[in-house]
Length: 381
Image 1 (cartoon, rainbow, N blue to C red):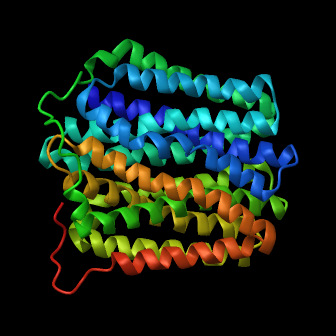
Image 2 (cartoon, rainbow, N blue to C red):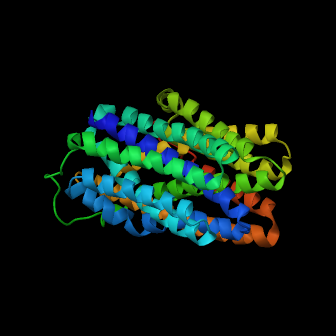
């Protein structure tokens, strides 16, 4: 029951987050924002995840999660009401920051709970299923936002997304008691200091941050590019939903792919596919071609994100898995908060083509870092 509650909550929260990201991007453009302004709003989603992920990981190891998760999800409700009641660019900045609280608690505590509630032989399967809920939300969120914007307009779409977060609060209020109250076996002190000496940990942190940065920038700047070539909000939402379909499909086959190739080779191939998709976007001028590239990129991200999540949890000391997840989220969000703002500025100066080509290069670097070393064995998952 507890693991299914986490899956349901993750689906609701991430549908809301992904819908709000495309909503805020297009709403900001409608209000006259530049690409740099849109990038700044997207960066606000990750201020609190950057500052709080590691402390949240400690809380997740030591205390119950029910009311932390309920309060953070309620912050999502309040965040979506702000641009509904006071539509402006500044309200979008504030709302994105509040949704960042929801994102921080749900991401760290959700991932840690999946690991804690899973037996070792079930962990890979449960993390894969957890990532599938994310794929569902990547599909449903942009599609929901795109059609809602075209049908009822921007303010009412904010209200509709607030209802999704409210459903998450209701789930936790009714069934949250099944979640573990605390992990009494946690040893005080120790932290991850000696784990940080592990070169494999830093390698995984680098790959995880590159994967997340690429995913966020693709979803941030593809709508801007598509808007610039005259595509409607519903078509843009459909493009990002094609990404989600691919991500969902590849995650269904994740266990078989890992057994066939090993995690490192699979991750390298995925990064190279992502690099190719980034590079080709500026050369594409139709919805059909962009849908294919979004699908290819979705396949890539469908592999890299679950693999880095599983490997980070597995490398953590007993009783400090939440801290490991929090560390991963902290590093990811450092890239996420700097990335949209920095690349938004680059796009304003040089045009969007440079943004896609630079990110394609970064993804190719990720592929090189992921490549199996000579003599490395197959998957250790």
